[in-house]
Figure (cartoon, rainbow, N blue to C red):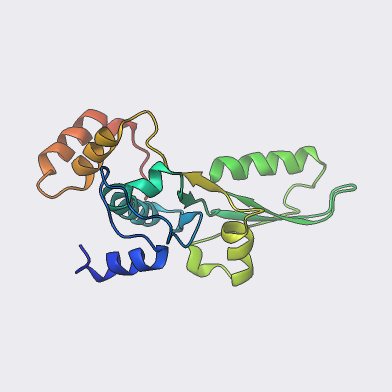
Length: 189
């Protein structure tokens, strides 16, 4: 596993060697209380998240078990809102279209005139300025993080799901999964 440069670099960066679920890794060298996965808020970013989550579930499961792994949720939109009554002008970030719609409804209710605001859509993290990246994704006071956990599944069930979705030689399993549940997926094109 350490022959893979990227895995080696991640292990060195976080200060923990790869391990299995039955291992008792030395976490005293862990350099960060929270290991945050940052990726764009689009389908490509989701794929990057899945690849990194697969790595952490398979080779760093104790970090997940102990609550150290998170997914950062960068916004898709920024609304530059005008002053409204006693409320000053503000930058408001929205994760998705639903949150954007709710923000615009709230602005209307607060008395902002229609189209008095401007809306920007981020294409990705690389498009953000350092200040915007800090404000939306890195600042502990304002960022949104999704903790990674086993959820309702056991470790074995979770790894089984990842193997089915990401494993070599699992094309038939993935096809079956898509045939059974393909109608429940939201497509991002």
